[in-house]
Amino acid sequence: MLNRRTLLSSFAAAGLLGTAAACSPSGGGGDDATSAGGGAKGTLTFRLWDQNAVPAYEESFAAFTESSGWGVTIDVVPWADYWTRLPLDVASGDAADVYWMNSANYILYKDSGDLLDINEVVPDGASQWEQSVVDLYSRDGGLWGVPQIWDSIALFYNKTLVDAAGVDPSALTFDPAAETDALRDAARALTVDGAGLHPGEAGFDVNSRAQFGFNSQADRQAIIGPMLASNGAQWQEDDEYTFASPEGIEAFRYMADLINVENVAPSAADTNENGDYTRDLFTQGKLGLFQSGPYNLLAVSEGVADSFEWALAAPVAGPAGAKSLVHGVVAVGNAKADDDQQEGIAELLTWLGSKEGQLPLAEQGVSFPGHVDAQDAFLAFWQDKGVDVSAFVEAAKNPAEADTGTRANAGLMAAMPIFQEVFIGRLTAEEGIPQAQEEGNAAMTE
Image (cartoon, rainbow, N blue to C red; front, top):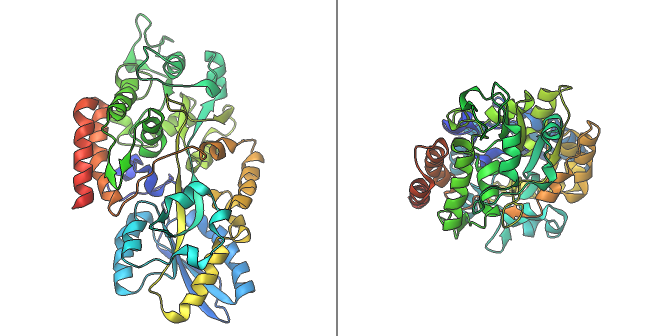
């Protein structure tokens, strides 16, 4: 929806915690506040982490103020500070009336009684919103946020390169148990060294590669999540990691082998340090297949400009079919706000869940809106640019498991450095993935 995201640690440069902020086109922006003006009934506060979404919300809130009598002040807290400030503000009673929340953190606040149950505020809302996002924020019989924006995963492809290589992007599959598969064959055909040779050909020089086939890398949302699920592996169960199953280890080995054995993906020495390295290769015309989310649409569109034609296809399918990690950002209601604000909070949440309230997010191209009836406006935004983004809508219908749990961020932060070691080849999948599971689970229970 995530450059597109700014993260909490050294992963900031790498963009690795895909389910954390991926929905946002940018996690940046300074600490700022804007106001739609005071209303006759009073003023509400709304907090988010993405400056790029502010103009859309300003337009939405202007209409809300006119119809409801409540003014809204927008508070922008950058992603790098968001999750350190939020618990402090919640504890001191200074949290916004309504604020953005992600799936990796909401359970902590829900369990502490800080969030309103949306089923009680907007009783008929869930049937209007993107089902995969509703499912993500449903727990213990309640719904703990109003879906605002969401993203899924699809395959960007360079039409010029795939046509020259004879690759059909709509027919790409992988199978770790097979000697080869359509993805490996296509990626070899798309990978070229300085002399024009492909992997497997005599004299091929891996160090002089001028063009790559596929973006296998330690990216939780775009690569790891979809490919694990597509191979039949389970990410977690009851807030405990279970990805070190035979199917999970096999999938990680396959992803790492695309880099270190097949030589069809860039070195993890580059992608571990910069999660946008492969996106930049794609915009430069040096990568044929780039699996990613709509959070990269704007960067790809602007980066490619008129250099070559590109399009989107379904994510690469494994033995269990094509899977897409779906992440959504929701607006949550502050259950501990003053009583005189609660009426306004309920009205604002209802507005934010309506088609009218979300249309500016779609019409300004911020991201896929949570309300299903507003999604056509986002499709039209990109259709006007000559891009059919419906592949993301289709991909969202078959979601992989997202990160959930009270300390999901802590678990992923502990596991990710070990994933990186597997991708770079310093640990085998058989060694590293059980270790990542153990350390991730330990971090989630501390």
